[in-house]
Length: 631
Image (tube, rainbow, N blue to C red; front, side, top):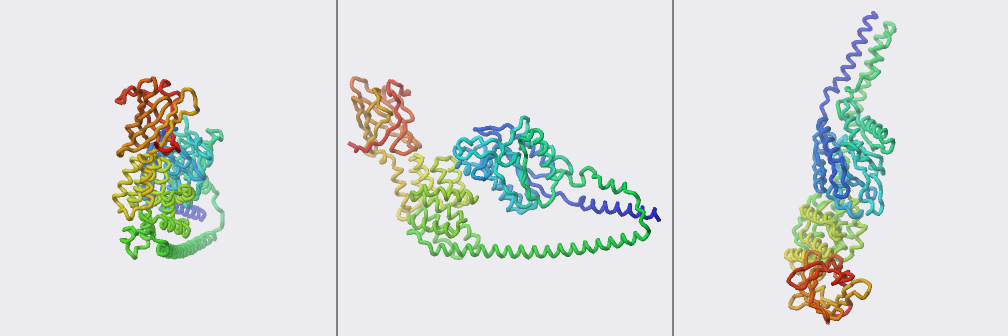
């Protein structure tokens, strides 16, 4: 009987092991998607390892069953497009992994990944030239998958810190959404080493531990942390934020781990000496286990039904909220003051638009009205819309544009901050950002304007914003061309009041009429006393004036982008006739135009050479408008 009991117990143990292992072997490999980016070729502060890190990481992930998209030395548009495509892939289900190596920095508590094309002069440039890390989190949250992994080897020293108001080190802490793990190469607020070898220190150890079969993801990053802390003598401590709700293995599964001690203990255990009645007791335990499993199955079924009911209730709640917002917008449209000239877009709009379309295009008519007559009424409309719904980024973008076109640019600072916090990238938001970037002379303004047009922004309004930005940076000819396109689109009775003021400001030749003085700094024995009166003769600019012991004549005025070049002929007592060619900077306005260069020649036909001490000592600094009248 004892031998029979031993055989029965051994058989039950073997069956239990097989039953436990069989389901694991039957589970299919989950779908795995990865986006890997490594940026090294920065102009201001190049890095050695990130591109290598990205290539090696992409190769390792492919071997582990990931569908990998790899970018190296990517610009902003490439990174933006890749993240959007990554978000679409995530919606098909499975596990998602995002890896980034390169420069990363934080501004105002938000993390940004720096493209190699980023032109960062001031802290405000970061929001428009870099990729917000929150965008990746947003795409993962939208997909609602059970597992998402973000790995940021991007905590190197901020090379732009000197131009920032607050030089915050490293990356800021981000909260991991449910089912996510965010791994940093070092703790938030700290900086990481770029490494001395082919790979960065953090990525080097991550690649090795990821390949270990049967190692859970939490154990992988634990071992990476141990390796990095030991190698850097605690100067760099990798860190994770996790809200995982399940286990994940990069390589293999739980069954691939080395044998644990528990099975050996069972085999080595002494043969039980219980009396014969122990067999019925075991049978009773099996029945109890079956009963418990049946109860657990029933409980799970009830919870599943309750979850389905909750999801249905939430969907109905969302539908009602969409309807409420749509009705509120429609009411606001009906009660708000109307522009003097109603744009065709508003007349052609259907009366009963679908809820989704109404929600997206609720302000389309008012955006079009910004480029037409009735700007004060439209500005009042957007002010009311923002007060009614502070989270309405489109309405806030419309308010920003209305304030700039009304000459109240200083009031846009707070509105721009709220726009950046919203994370919204609609046509209106892109247009507002493009306008403000253009006013600052930032080259990324063109990208925002183009994206706004692609997303359906009103073309007349885009042209008006582009012309306004061109006028600010002193590119008068470009501004005139853009304004001419605007005039072709919008009939004269419907044109915005701001367009008339803009046309006057862009008429640089009329604005230059007046008296100007040559500023050479403090007076000395060698400085010239020059007064130049510029006037228009037959639509051509000419200048006449006086010089120390002589007279001057200015002619051949030429404009190129934000520069003005003209010739001056001088006739001074007891001196031969001489000629100067001056190039002035118009980007700061026409009241004080800095002198970029002065060239001298004995003939107006050519032979220009940089003017030396014989012509100007000290060199002229600017041509400054005088309050005197034109003679």
